Length: 311
Image (cartoon, one colour):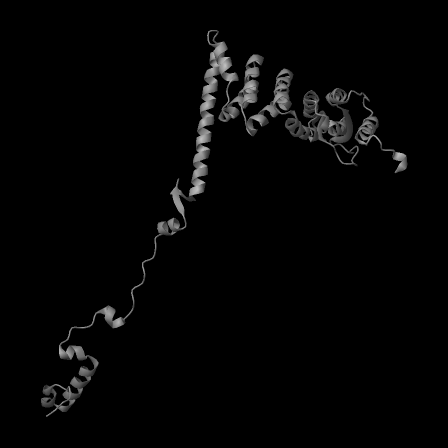
């Protein structure tokens, strides 16, 4: 009696056939026994790969949101939408101010429209008002705009009023703006306007000096003394406009350029409005004597009991 697993049929086959069947039985036992073949997964015993997240899932996992064709943070979206609301409100004020301006030309609606303009207090109206002041030709309308700016709280309205006080082409409009600044906060306005004294534009220096004098800013006196006279580089010839000024506060050196090209030389300019502001603020008048003004300033800043001889 045989107890091995060799099928009985093998013992009735020729020797060579018996060898082939035996080899086949060892190599493919399942097929010989009639079993079902193992599945590919079972045979390979390879675990299936995890599903990879999509790009959208990756971005969402980082806290980003698809907004206007870009991936953005929630905070960025809030800033964009806030800017959109501001932009829309400012555009609406442009249209609204245009309608009010048209009503000013109607005798029946003029007074009501002017009052409505003067009472504007919405910060979103500032860009529209600032642009309207520049374009407006009627002094009484500009006065309404200036008053409106003075009623609006916030840094943008304040900056617009300072700009009018220094840069508007009409002297009366500048004075109106200075008067409004005088009522609301002359010290802060003076700190901003002093910065205009350091520019290269002599006309602007004089306008700024006039504003500082009207504001009563004694803190600006040292800066005003510093620009009582300013030095400029003047270009003559070579196609340049006669006497054109290219810069201010030039460094030492230079002089007259030689040759056939444009000639450059330095010139000093006395700033009349600066002198008027100094006289207004100090009650003194040393004219164009800068040394006298500086000596007055030094004496004013020294303690009353200070004796320079004691060191």
